[in-house]
Length: 352
Ligand code: NAD
Image (cartoon, rainbow, N blue to C red; front, side, top):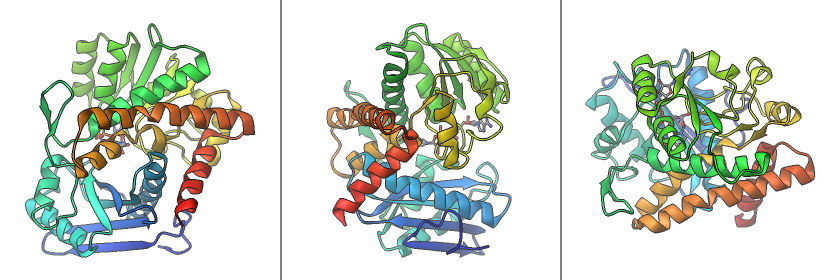
């Protein structure tokens, strides 16, 4: 399994392989860049088919976090961790505590948070072994209520804000009334997003491998349900990928019928050249790590004294950031992802 020659290595500062035989832990912590601050990123638990697949995921996600925090204007670097295992059957207190000890050994250069396959409750277990945990504290909401540390609602709100900016740029519309949005994956983020879209007057087409989950939500929102494969062919104005990565690839791009791709999933492009393929087809792609930064913005505010209004204003800045990327992409005739990468590198380069 190559590391330094890995296609996604991209000059990672540090990659830590973690194991605890007694607890059954096999995990990787990838720290991409700490120029702007400590590397903050979620811990994903997934039954990867191979160690190589887990490493690729960790490297790509970690690099994405560097760029995400830079574009969100945060004093944070990029990192990510993956636990190799099934989150439904392979999780135990011993395993989570062992992961907490692994995070602790990184000495604060990596700060862990929840991600697909891990929860706020899991982070609280890890917090028994390390102080370098985020996304665990209850927070005040703008309307006087309380919500858990789960960053998903903030991520969904950021995607909603960014999706509106993309619709404005590509379709010249300032509202979503009557537009059709196809949401792939209605988990923590996709479910919240679907509700926000419904409230804004959008028509919804939903798909999820979890049939009971998608059926219940569709009934609640009066949405159409399609198959996991059929979502790529859906007749929708916007496609919102909110499941897993690499969904925009050679097989799926020719099938898309939408004008805009704007969703929460990380690493939506199979490979970087797919950004150009999407642009060539006249589809506007909202770069994943820019539009899905609401969660990390929320976590940053949690770490620095939570003020709901301030956090929301910061999340809403995702819209203008995307508008700047879209305008520059038009002027330079470049894919939006390439422009976002260039802008993130400019910001990191200035600090260096
Ligand atoms: P989640 O696990 O709660 O939800 C994912 C949903 O996708 C689940 O309902 C799952 O059944 C479904 N799914 C899986 N494979 C599918 C497929 N092939 N087709 C259709 N549905 C499928 O995860 P989440 O927290 O909602 O995150 C969703 C995506 O957004 C992930 O890629 C995650 O990395 C990214 N993201 C999440 C956050 C956050 O704050 N939670 C922040 C940034 C990015």
